[in-house]
Amino acid sequence: MLKRLISEQFSDLLYCKESLSIFHHVRIKDSTKFNVPANLASHYRGSGGSGDTSDAGISIQYEFDLKTGQFLDLHVMKAVRNDQQDAKETAENVCENDLVIRDLGYFSISVLQTIAKQKAFFLSRLKSDVLVYDENGNEVDFEKLYKEISKCKIKKCERRVLISKDQVPVRLYIGRVPDDVYQARIRRKEQEEKKKGSQMKKRTKLLLRFNLFVTNVDAKQLPASNILPLYRFRWQVELCFCTGSPFSPYTSCKK
Picture 1 (cartoon, rainbow, N blue to C red):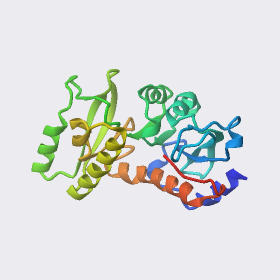
Picture 2: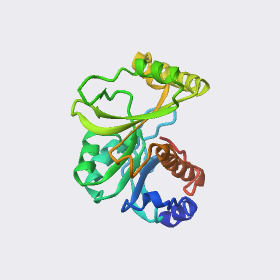
Picture 3: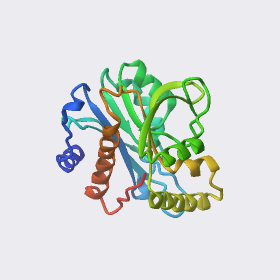
């Protein structure tokens, strides 16, 4: 029943462009969590505590093929199982020539490496705590980069880089965001850090000036101009899932 409801909700989200013909599946994976009555805690354990948390909660993991509309994965499980854990436990399910698109909750260097080893592809935003090196092994100076592209009025560019201590080779898409978008990001991030009782790191503040994506797809197969429009479909699936509300009065869509 759940699969049918979600399928109907996503029926208009196919993206069958010729440029995607090289991929077997275009896998968009996401999740949603919501609280359920406390008497279900023995089956569906929640995070507990106060506020918007509960002793009982459900997480739904779903994976959707953007080319065909086919559901590749749909599981209902306890809310305490997070997205990164799911990414690591299901990495072997990715097939050769698949393209995997997920949000930062699933981000894991080891998972990206597994995808690449299986001759598949990924497209992901870059986490702010992941170090980036040029092809000579020197750490990328994003402050210097921002000054350079601002001076030349460049809105987007890309570079071949290495990420993390494992030196994973990727294409890095770099998009400069407008000042009003940057200021809005700063305000949101400051509020998040205030709730946690911490301060924003200088590097995090700097990276908020960019849209940063990493991929192992060759530029001929996925041009830089197609990266942001394609990734936006992941966000559309998330919105569709949140606004569909096919569950219960306890529904509360959270990321």
